[in-house]
View 1 (cartoon, rainbow, N blue to C red):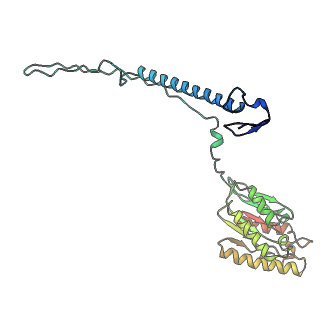
View 2: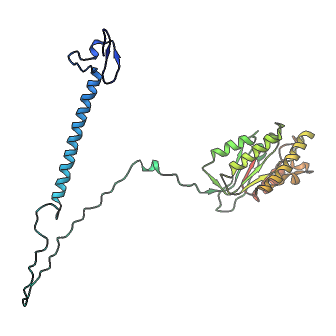
Amino acid sequence: MATAGFFSCSECGMFSLDPFSTDSHNNSGVCSKCKLVNCLVEKVDKLELRIRGLIRDRQQGSLLAAPGTPGRASTPSTPALEPPQQGEWVTSRRHTSPPVHHAPPVHVSNRFAPLSEAPAEEPVKGTLVIGDSIVRHVKLATPLGAPAARVICLPGARAPDISGNLRLLANRRYSRVVIHVGANDIRLRQSEVTKANIKEVVKQAQTLSEEVICSGPIPMRRGDEAYSRLSSLNRWMSKWCTDNHVGFIDNWLMFEGKPGLLGRDGVHPTRDGAALLSCSIAHSGVCIIFR
């Protein structure tokens, strides 16, 4: 109920200070907006009734145009035969139905169909080698007609960095996956964190291939602590891979005691070391390498 200076709509219940927001000649107390909405609703109802009527008339017209429609008086398709009299011959005529004309098929297409279709699975690719500067000179020979190997070098990469790059390749498939862990991870001096990161990389690699292989670390000549941590990590990886049905390449045995396989920095492999690493990877499959 409206008071002096205030107007309340009986439908929406909104208050207004505008004296023109309600119709002073209408005692219903309905604001102009509600009246406009009611008017539009009435027009929409009339249009819907009109549309239903047009649809009904169109359907009735199509039914009347169809031959043999029930409910219409039409001549029977076959003449009624009188019951034969005893001792008389009755001649019956076979009535042939008119030929049925089939309308040509209507071809309907949806131009947005390609957006809803699931992308086709990408074919399996060859070998993938991804890691830090250790894999810079890794080269894998592929048989004639086989997919080419791919080498991705990420200098200074650790296990989480490799895992992030593998997520970018989630829609691709490779023949095999191998994981190599090393010095960049042990610098954190957190053995359990490093192990958890390696497990996560293996899990991510398994989304790219059914066969995952780990390539063990290379022994570095950078102090006793680094050597001890790498040796401990190599032993853990060897056991963990065996227990979890993951392949393992023991690079420690191949590089230990052979200074000619490592460069002057004691970290990166020489040309001969890179060739030996390439050979071990080629005989194992796809390789993911961390230093």
